Image (cartoon, rainbow, N blue to C red; front, side, top):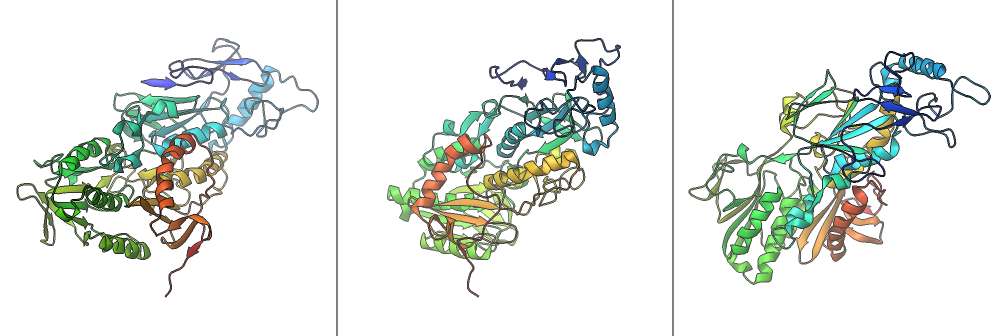
Length: 526
């Protein structure tokens, strides 16, 4: 399914066509089904009928001088018409001559001929944000933006944590097409492979989409088949659950409602995982759930992790470990799972340790998408290696990777996608123009941790600075506290749902810097 939304049209717009653009004389430039521009409907054989034959380049961005008209054919880089000192009539031969001169430029600097094609793989958080931001930045007469995803359902994944307890499942789902601004084409299809040499993406249905620039924002996925006895076990979706998918969180809701006593394991199979604090949040929320029911004394809860503590960073690990202890939640650290023994209902580690359970809530190994692996773009886990500061592929300068799909050494979280996209926009424009990339992403992550009792903690960190205590976003004033449970943090997490739908995805600027600030943070004493 292909859905192109044009300004002034309905949701689906018209299928396929790229519409009309305006040339330097203000006349329509018709674009045929082959994607070539034809002046005034002239036949391809007529002189001047085809505008810009060569390889589609990277074109010009929307930075025309006020009053100069669109930055397109017959205009210079800043929207001024070329080749005349007084009023310029810009006859057609001069337009063609200008285009031919431009076409001789290095493709890294941009070629005006043809519509420049930006292809974004994935319509999740990062892909949707990037598409909407770039639509507002790029010259619409010179660029097409196409987003590909396998279905039309955009899901608010932070809500998966709450579905087992109180949130209605339908609340987290919206139509992807409604979240993409008019002028962005949406293709509903699975992705089979990226052919870098041809600059084409092969879809599962056999179609191929060409591109000039590619953004991979395909995220990560839990793969329960990678642990023996998990997806292939008799207890799967019965006494062995996960909440990292929509289906998993809904199934867990039913089992949790029926659970009245016994041993619960909250387990992480391996790192990295999407939102690494979510398993901790679930442990705190499930403890609070049974406390409210008055049966906490009948439920034994153990947090099982392959890490040597509750979290990856020392200061946060100490604080979170202390909170686990305060809530009487056991900690089983350094637990490298080998298999799940479904018959005995035990979680078995490679070192021989065995943990019995009545309900196992596990986080399966998280991996990249299969097409990334099949395309030779990913590492062993299927994540795409990039420069961690520019988010540009290390093997192809025409590819950027946003969100969970990359191998950057920070949390795979929505906040990281948000901050990274903001840094990416100017870098993309610079790459298009062949300039050095101006922005360096610092790995900024900002994560709420639900701690039960109507409170939450907040972590703020980046590549080089671990989560610290303090206040956020304003020193002393806050109103949010770092690494300390508070009501304000909990309300902030709940409020983020509306911020996500109404501000983040549409591409509105939030009053939070994409770079981490040390203001309000306290370094630990030696």
